[in-house]
Image (cartoon, rainbow, N blue to C red; front, side):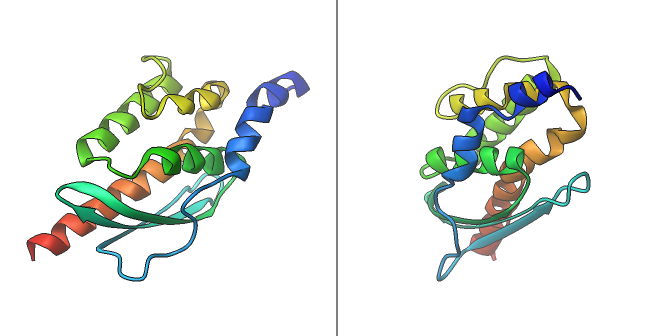
Length: 149
């Protein structure tokens, strides 16, 4: 990896997203908890959430991740309140397609995932970028299961 590749990957914008992650911590009474770990870099993201009428009403995350995972968690956190499972699934599908070069930048409210476009060239880091969405979808499934029980 050349210095130019690293500069493109770790842009000021990406570093800013990683440094400003909203909704950090834990909820007092989560309905669902999701935890995902990247085998590539060891990043861990734990998500807790509360649903109301099929939408995320409360959200918290603990992020112990590489800069790419942190930046993705930062983008997600700024738009996750009010999201449905379908919105999250679409965001994950679109982000994965963007990284694989088979799709455009995700649409609003997740257009800031564009900052992660340079990660496209680093296939071994795609799982880290998707980690926050995967943990959120796991927590969403757990909350729906708890509501159905």
